[in-house]
Length: 107
Image (cartoon, rainbow, N blue to C red; front, side, top):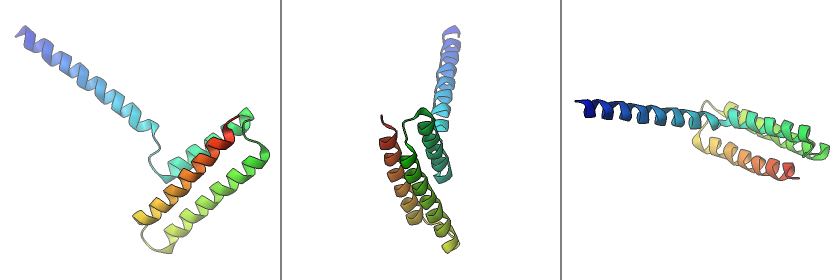
């Protein structure tokens, strides 16, 4: 009886720990397009604040972010549905923008 209680408590602790770890990891990742855009804007601001991104690079990155926003709005208003293909197109643009931010913020 005592061994089974220990086993039950030990397994509850392990399961609880795994739930906490998975919850923490899930919340660190941007969930959608808007979250990714917000994260990229924050990375650009941090790069400017740290001095890693120059004014010229800031202008280029801000222009790119604006283009992505316009593309997203245009695709969403073109018809009633934001299809997987359209979503993938915006995600590809965000991936490219992410690479540009990374390159610009490297000293």
